[in-house]
Length: 463
Image (cartoon, rainbow, N blue to C red; front, side, top):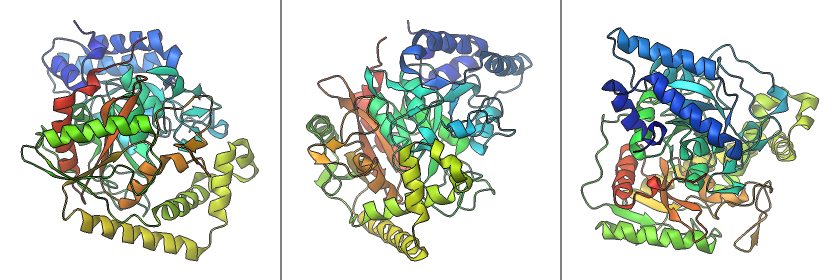
């Protein structure tokens, strides 16, 4: 019989609703797993069991009093260390904020708390979320549970590892250049970059690049969380409704599927290609109409690079002054690049972003979804900051090896990372399922249909 923490989030919530288990029992099962395995992977940080016990007891008291608990009641979680949390430190993985203790929760964190989630700490990130490898000078490096010498990805690396290792039931994350999708792919969980600002942020600006979202071991687990956090909020000028049914039905008719094996000529290593070729064959076996195609993504790399650097230079680090020298070199470089941009360069990048959106809208008039690689290589040595070479091609910058996600970001479309299988070395690979404009439900339905015939999510790491 599976341990409580090995059950899906949907199963755990159902058991709590039937009074077959208490919130305190669910918490104790996850705390035991954290104590058993977290030392090997370093995914959960700022752990505070007493805070979590208070939350769990409140859920149990509500049930005892005959009240109806929230949709996430009793589900154990830990929040990404880029989210403001009043119960736990929020360090952003940087010594500049090592002692930062917020007085309020972010919108996402508060919504999860109001829905009954039992938070016990934070999940590890790269410093300021920069780069898809979760290491920082405050908490150290998060390791991949399928091979603990390798990277877990990022920036939601701690969240993905905590899920894969059964230390939490659900997890939140965020994504600019792949931070929900990359770690999901490398840890055999599901990560969804929903349509821009379907999940609102109080720090919301007019950019569609950075989003917040959900992760889960299964599509249904992810949706359980997404329905709670994906509601409009007036603090975010771009937030919009996310209409999802209580239960996501899998696609029950043939889809028109575009397959982009390399997203416009990107280097993709052979072990990743081999797994994805098998996945594309699975989709054909479903009876879906498959054709190799992709939208026009010209100048996507340049556009993303300019807007990313501009965001770093004008964000929280804009007032860091000399303290910026305490951050890692890649962050200093990003801020310097952004500070040197002219208004004309930023405006041109914004105009190109609009063209990329229009290209994608036109493309999806002929296709329901597009399949593509999430990552260009399998998890690399955790001692590296980033891979300098991918399939024989050298990287100029620390984000070059993540173009397979960055290019999709500039499309502005919903994109989900679904477990696709494993390399011969036993390392997880994800397939990126990309939908048309505002077609979040279509992406989720397609993902659920593929998940039902593959069940790769069931292969958990061993410790």
